Amino acid sequence: MRQKRGKLKVRCPLLGIHRTHHGAGETKVYNFLVTAKDDAWSLPAYEYERDRFGEYTSPALKERFKSLTAQVIEELKSYPALFAYEGIQKDVRIGYLRRIKERARSILIEYDFEPNIPAIPFAKIAPLEGRLDIEKLGNEPNPLGTEG
Image (cartoon, rainbow, N blue to C red):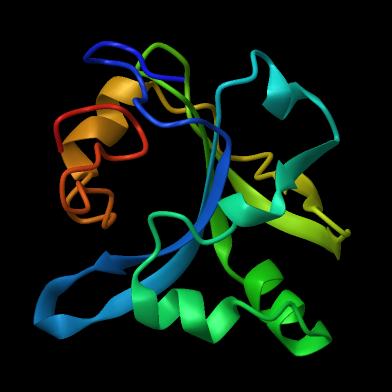
């Protein structure tokens, strides 16, 4: 799926692991999930194609989490997650992965949103793309479809 500016220019969905950049070199890891499917985050679970796992993730983090062992799954579940939709129109949610199940060609995730954190308008996330490590990789657009 290729769309014009303001929309994701790669096929969705994707499941990535990113680092946030804070002062004094501090970094923190979070899960970043993007989908093009309308209302996907209103469902209790979502299934990603296996080859989408780790896309737009730094090579070091991708290598660290590529094998979904029980230990890796527990670590991924311990990180907060940012749930976004392709493009810039829909709100972003914050939550945690509750369950990760690897299938032959896909990964099924179950998740919960933080009940005390309301949906965040995309316009408030866009200025943080650099700090959230959401940026262009080579000639590819960033996963949110903005210029980053």
